[in-house]
Structures are given as C-alpha cells and as structure tokens.
Length: 108
Image 1 (cartoon, rainbow, N blue to C red):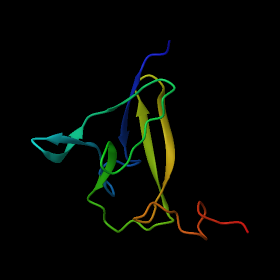
Image 2 (image 1 turned 90 degrees about the horizontal axis):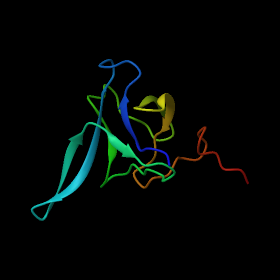
Image 3 (image 1 turned 30 degrees about the vertical axis):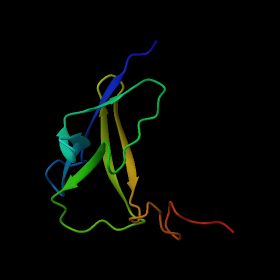
Image 4 (image 1 turned 45 degrees about the horizontal axis):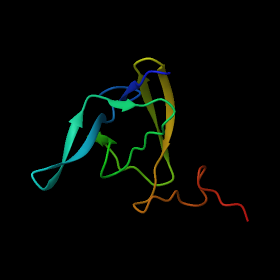
C-alpha cells in the first residue's frame, strides 16, 4: 500500500511576477468561505481535482492579466515524490482552451 503524499506549489521565480497560494473552500456557519492552506493531500491512485469552489491554486499580485490560450510555468513540490515543473494552460471562464492555441487546436 502506498502512502499519501502532500503537494506544495510555488512559482518559478518567487516574488518576481506573482505569489502562489493553495486555497480551499469550506462551509462555515451556512456560508462558503475560502481559506489558505499549506498543502493538499494527494491520496495514492486517486486523482486529485483542483477547481473553483474546492481546492485550487490562486495567483496573487499579477503584473499583467493572464490570457486564455497561453500557459505559465508552475513548479509542484511533492513531499515524497520530489518536484515537477508543469505548464498550466489558461482557460476561458467556461473552462475551454481557445481553438488555434497550442493546447486548443481542433483538427477537422
């Protein structure tokens, strides 16, 4: 049986372009409240979904707006598995990656 792992995130160059925080949303006194958390537990074999209204990554202090279809680098640090660098695709508010972009090209 594999142990659970925790993940922490930070940007490629801390404090240069933005601050990265992990957040979760919880019900408190009949109201949904967002709270900063230090890590996200990643159970073995089970996918961990990050999404609005649940656990998510928040970028603060952006110097310029993020544009749907573009990507930005994000380093994930796992307590047991080490670090990986991912390119995060920016999506439209409805969750789509625009067509004609590297990740959103449609082939007919």
